[in-house]
Image 1 (cartoon, rainbow, N blue to C red):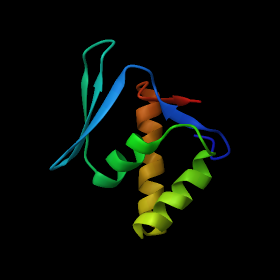
Image 2: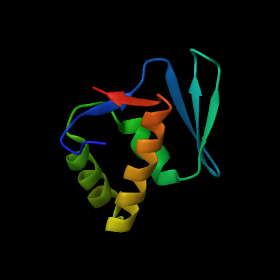
Image 3: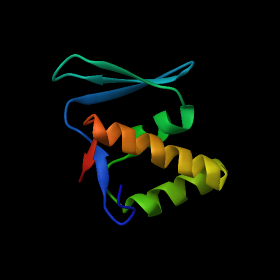
Length: 90
């Protein structure tokens, strides 16, 4: 993923927090995806393309007092979500 690009959730995707992290549901193909991190779930729900990805991750880390490693984990997980069409360039 390009940290200088803006990303958002794809149309027709809903994310719901759960005890284990979260669920992403696609209304297009009725597929359900498990998100195994509360941080990823929160970040993905807020992802709206308003700012470049690197800036959004850094702000999220600061607001939630997360380590740099946690930010890198969110980025790796977002890349996987992009590959399956849950996250798309804005």
